[in-house]
Amino acid sequence: MGRLFGTNGVRGTINDELTVDMMLDLGRAIGSVLGPGKIAISTDSRMGGEMFKQSVISGLLSTGCDVVDIGPCPTPCLQFNTRELGCIGGVMITASHNPPEFNGIKVMGSDGIEVTREVESVIEDVYFSREFKVAPWDEIGTQYSDDLAIRRYIDGIKKHVDVGAIRKKAPKVVVDGANSVGALATPLLLRELGCKVITINSQMDGMFPGRNPEPTPENIVDLSKTVISVGADIGIAHDGDADRATFVDENGAILWGDQSFAIIARHVLWKKPDSTLVTPVSSGRLIEDIVKESNARVDWTKVGSVIVSHRVVEIGAELGGEENGGVFYPDHIAVRDGAMTAAQMIDIMVSNNSSLSGLVKSLPQYYSTKTKVPVPPDKKDALLETLLELTKDENRITMDGVKLTYAEGWILIRPSGTEPLWRCFAEAKTQEIADTLCERGVNLIRDAAAKT
Image (cartoon, rainbow, N blue to C red):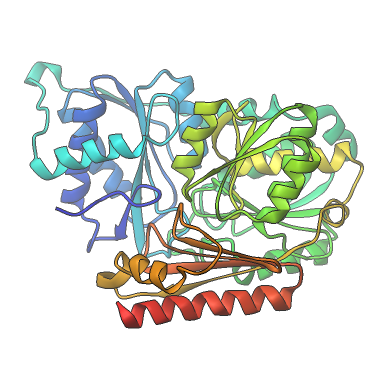
């Protein structure tokens, strides 16, 4: 019996690895474990989203759960509304940043946070054993719609920024919605904050004609060019379900995730003495530097937004974040949230009377490189043991994959939770050293694959 859930939910290729029958049974398993009660459901723009949503709804209703369909929206919007509507859980039909042939499912608890690994395991057990709850004919669930979810979500975000100050400054912003649900919330939010908003890739299209849904530097070149051409103050790019935001400064330079996270961390931690920040081992020394200067503490975790969310709540941390552009602001909701992150960044620019490039220049300077190495699926999990042997004499952290630390920087090599590949991250004081370290990490992965 294999696992269904990866780092962030269940994902697979549409009508191949991920089928209507599978999603029906996942709905039945989720309802059997979380129910009885009301469950919120939503989709992003991906192909098969409506088809899979109806399958999941049927499964949930059959177990006696009620379902509130809040329409297409960002994952953090579904999470916020799950909590605000008093639901026992939420289901998001999404494959986040994966290529267009993928779809998937994320499962939330009553607090809007993705359920724990333990709950995922129980759902898997029910799915594979097919021991589903079956409601009597007169106790099957009821389905209804709620069309105020995005309105509710935007109003929630606006409570955490200085709307008056932003309106006075009226920054010009370009939003790249990735042809998905980020385009339904972030442009509206920023216009209501008083920004002059220009959008690209804003039509919902599951073929993702504008760009790949992962907001990596090579995928958001058009955003960078647009920011320069229209003289914008900032560019914002979302992933497929808009739980992350990647930023472009007024000169077209693309920030890497640790930089945007560090800017927000400095702003939040300075306001709250003796704070704690939760972040995975994939974050770098820049975050450590910001935490130290703010007299705060770092709480390290394994990689995965689910792990970060639950740790933020568990220890009452003031902030969480990841190097991929995910920021967790628990005063709003302890999940990564692209629109909340966008609003925070603009709020910080205005309150500091600074350009985005100015905020970046004020940070300690590091350089990073990241890449991924395809690995045969049958070797993906076995690779770690070989890597541990190959690096046994080095200074390392093995909480999640292998993180090798050196005087000049560090390398993190770890398996993807969603694809048949290993990821390699490197950071150093110069780009050349970061590239060299990343190349060493890639070679280690390839050597381990050859020996596994």
